[in-house]
Image (cartoon, rainbow, N blue to C red; front, top):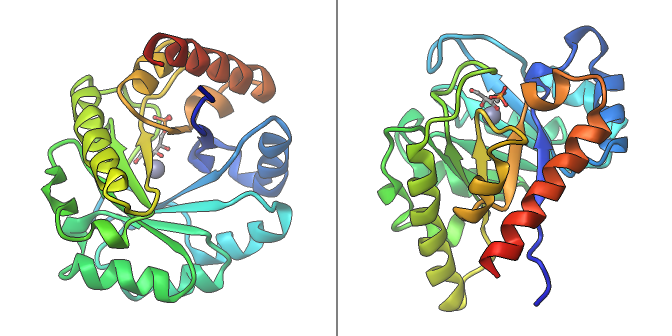
Length: 232
Ligand code: DX5
Ligand code: ZN
C-alpha cells in the first residue's frame, strides 16, 4: 500500500519578519510543501500580523502553495485581495463570517482552494452542508492568535472525527479534502497527530525556532512515516 500524501506547512509567523523572502526560500529548499501564512486582525484574535501586501511581496520568492489562514472578521472583503496577491489556499473561521457558504464560494470563484478552520471549541458540524465546497479542513490545536503555544490534546479526538467525515465523503465520490492541523506541532507529537488522521502539518516555532530547517523537516517526516507503519 502506498503511503498517502502528507505535507509540511511551515508557519512564517515564527520566521524572521525582517528577512521574510529569504526565510521562505530557505524553508522551501529545506523541504517545505506549503507556506502557511497567518493573518490576524486584533479583532477576531488578540494579535496583529501580516496582510495581502506581504503576500504579494512573497509570491515571487516561491512556487510552493501559499496557504492563507484568515483570523479576521469579517472575511469577505479580504478574500479577493488575497486571491489577487497570489494566495493558493484561503481558509477562515466559520464564526467570523455571517454566511460561511457564501465565503467558501467566494474563495473558489477567485480561483483559490477553500477551507474552514475549527478553533478548539468550534464544532465540526459547520462542515455538514458545505462538504462539496471544501478543499481543506483545518483543525486548530491551540486557540488562534499566537505561535509557540502548547498542543491541546483533545484536538486528536477532533482530528479523528474529521477524518471519518472526510473519508465517508470521499467514499461517496466526493472531492479530496486535506486535513490540516495547526498549533503546537513538534517532532515529538507529530506521529500521534498523523495517527489521528491529519495529512497536512503546520509548524511555526518548531521549524523557525531552530537553525537547521532541513533537519527538523526531515525528522518530522521520519516520525510521520513511523505513524504510517503503525496504521497501515
Ligand atoms: C496560531 C497560528 C499558527 C501558529 C503556529 O494562531 O494559526 O499557525 O503560527 O505556531 P506554532 O507551530 O509555534 O504553534
Ligand atoms: Zn495558522
